Image (cartoon, rainbow, N blue to C red; front, side):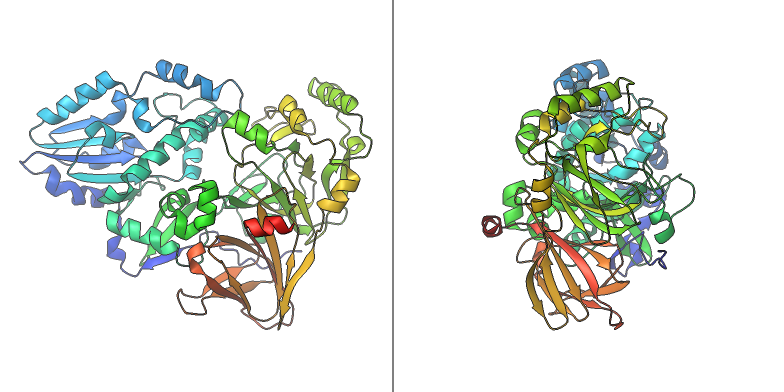
Amino acid sequence: MKRQSSYDKNPLIQFSENGDKCRPGWDAVAATLESLASSDCRSVVVVECYPGVDLAELRTGLASLAWHTVICAEDALLASTELDLLLSPFLGDDPVFGKMHPWELSQFFDSVKIGKLRADINLAQGSVLVYGAGAAYVAATWDHLVYCDVARWEIQRRQRSHRSGNLGANNQHASPANLYKRSYFVDWRAADAERHRLFEHFDSFVDNNLPGHPMLVSGEDYRAALASATRRPFRVVPFFDPGPWGGQWMRRNFDLPGAPPNFAWCFDCVPEENSLRFGFGDRVLELPASTLVHEFPVTLLGNDVVRRFGAEFPIRFDLLDTFEGGNLSLQVHPTPTYMAAHFGMSYTQDESYYLLDAEPGAQVFLGLKEGVNRTEMVCELTAAQADGPAFAAEKYVNAWPAHKHRHFSIPAGTIHCSGKNSMVLEISATPYIFTFKLWDWGRVGLDGMPRPIHLDRGVENIQWDRTRTWVAKNLIDQVRPVAEGDGWREEATGLHALEFIETRRHWFTKPVLHNTNGTVHVLNLVEGEEAVVESPEHRFEPFVVHYAETFIVPAAVGAYRISPTKQTGKPLATIKAYVRTDHEIGDR
């Protein structure tokens, strides 16, 4: 069924009505630095850059200033061959997976080269520009610190078009998958730690997301804008991506462009990769949403979540579209023990499928059939990967009817996949790349190449006792009433006790009151065209949400109310996820 799309693809957090606080173009950046650059006195300007910032564009943009000395910090990086050797224990030879890298950004640099560059800085008599990833480390001290940032999704665009490589690697022509892997496990971890170290010291901030069109704000306004997001509901900027199994539901219902063959994913709440847009009058500053998590973890996430997960956003919402597409890969996620031992992570990718829509006959594959012969199944999976007969998934895996508002819980270790002609809201824990594909239906990726299969890892993690009887009892539509009031009712929809996420569905025709109780909430409007989120104490401006939009309510918000914007008599529904308390875990 086609809806009139109100889905907002470019959500905005309005921070200031003063557009002059956010200045566009490299001329604005240059004007800010001009008094330092043109001074006869010695001054050091550092432009620290997140890996993936376009350094050639930055150099050109600042070339008009009268620098006495210009230094690219990345000239002091270790040789790429030396870096490869040092990083090989963490990256290995797997095409997808590595182990989280514990280095700091400073460890990417050659101490001898650092010494030479610092000597050049100290000998300079006039203005000095030091730029690039690690610039603040190379310079050690400065008179003005600029931070130039770019969201991870934009970095991936640049990697896919071979415009950006990995830090110190000179490998921009490598496959996007290899570039992403190195970024995910190494570069971004070190760069995040460096940004956190410098966060309170930025004098200026530059948004480098739109090539050729940087946006400049003061460090003070940058920090204040981020802090303001923790006091109100907000949305991250969604991004859409095609895939070999992707569908057409989002294209039709969200008014998406016609160029890609399909849209498989919508990442609508993955702060590690999504961005935030802040309004300054009619100008917009875009920055990585992960910065908000790293710098304001307590007000965003709450004390209990931070105590358990640190400065990491533990809940992910995304959309999976298989309308007129195909089945997802048959897969399994690593158990917590395996995750810790092999990838150095403290929690794993438990998840669930909430059906926003489905065609008649749609299915979700979940759990093993009773009496499966393990050896026979593994042999047939192995043969299928060796160009033998196609794996008969239906012989071993249960296929369950998928219909609108049905909720399937998928704790790690449970074999599963969404079938074709479904629109899934995936609610999961955040470590989102740790999927072991067992069978991909004999197809290739959009690049024409086979997608990586991790059969050995997957077989090691399959929980063989999760058969049809157990799945029916524990994982499907575990709906139980929780509370009700005038014009509303609340239900628990049933993620399994093995999972740390609680989900609650509210049906309502009248206002319904929520309270974060000191922990972050993530919600999606799963039924109804539009609702409004308000503060009973008028602490934030009313926030309007539309069908299928995901939004975040920070822990610091406390009480909030969700109401229909129109009285149609038809109930609306939200699905809400949050991290379970110790009390809730004990009750299940």
